[in-house]
Length: 213
Image (cartoon, rainbow, N blue to C red):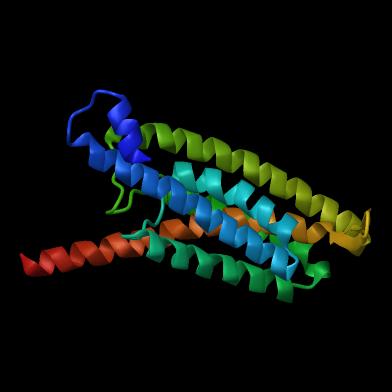
């Protein structure tokens, strides 16, 4: 893919490595998302996973966070994050979701306002990028937090009555709406939690460099 694009347009020789890396990253990210979606279908948490991505991906993009050294570590790290969130979805009683949404949102807001945007050693930001990403991450945080506050209110009012039966051709199942709301809050919380992991990683890396000086 990179070679084909490179040969179609006049570029410096050094650009080929950049195109190759971009193509590799493009394919890797989509394979990671496809694997997670397939897993979500297998465990019956597809809708919760979609809203998890809807909160996680944009906030992660603007706020920064942990970047692994290679695609395999990136996938394994994200798979671990997703597995932890699946466990929370499975063990949380539906009656507690309305109470948990706002605390999750407040924790996310604190971390984003404190740390974002936070560059990783493997993906640094320029000063201009930091200013722009700060504004975008705060605006997105405000929108997501208002959505979660609305979800919390709705869940507290209607509670377990928000179980919607779905019949599609030969398939019949129930959608537990509060868990979809929880998936969104967990996506925001996971993106903000990535900032903490990055803060620790950068601090440890700096200490190792200073110890060698």
